[in-house]
Image (cartoon, rainbow, N blue to C red; front, side):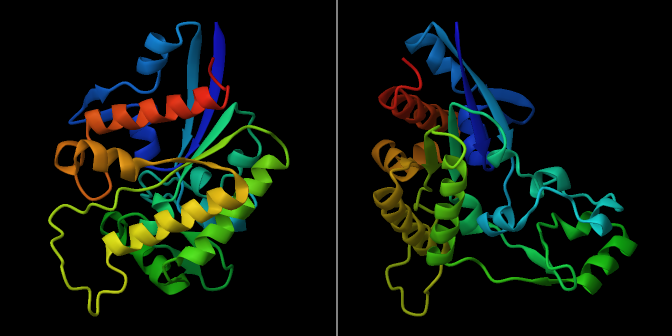
Length: 260
């Protein structure tokens, strides 16, 4: 039995499709091994997943949680400090690495005024009053990433991954269909979500041309099979959508010789 190790650095898009999708407490899709068992019965995939705030935060981190943050127990939800400041992507051994541009598109961060580190604070409504005051006193919002900055960051990330391993790098793009979006005139609407997604998807194509990374084309999958069938909301897919994306990942891994 050949074990294939995948390291996922991303959020629900990569986790739901390759690890598992849970809705209302029940498993709706049980991940990439559902496909592997049928198509490659002599292989099994081990999936290691770690959440990701944004490419700039990943590159700025040294792997250590800042001391003032470590002293507090904050309700950071899916982004615990160990994940936010992790360097595991650059340290773990994997047969393939799977990333996503979704965090750079959709995630807003704060920066510490004195120590300069980036933080995804979760929901401040869940904070104790003292922690809320600490956050307001010591942090300020940072701008959303633009495409050129994000893609330059991704290039640095890919280079760091390749400096220690020849494991293929796969990157999810994002479906540009936003439910309920019926805009026909874009005057004054420079950075709405659907337009922002399209710009990042094009940037990822250019990055693939330059570096040879593989794009998991979620946008094309949703377009072929129908957004109304596959999307829960602007950024998340249902079980059928997760299955189709996982099938595309397995096809890419097969083309690259990771699974045979």
